[in-house]
Length: 83
Image (cartoon, rainbow, N blue to C red; front, top):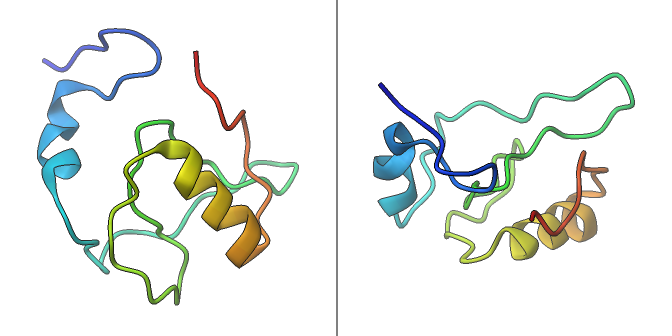
């Protein structure tokens, strides 16, 4: 059974994902909430924007957040900083 260590860390079941170095292009595109904001989890390391050519890993959530806002013009739910 997966468990959260705290609200900012990924469940143990996602550790294989977090060890990946390249994006898997079969991953689904982002879901959006009613306000049109992309639902991005604080432990995500890869851009899943459809058609984005980047396949590398972001080392910090804030780098991914900035990429999504600047390069794709997305509004993102939550904050760039998770406590």
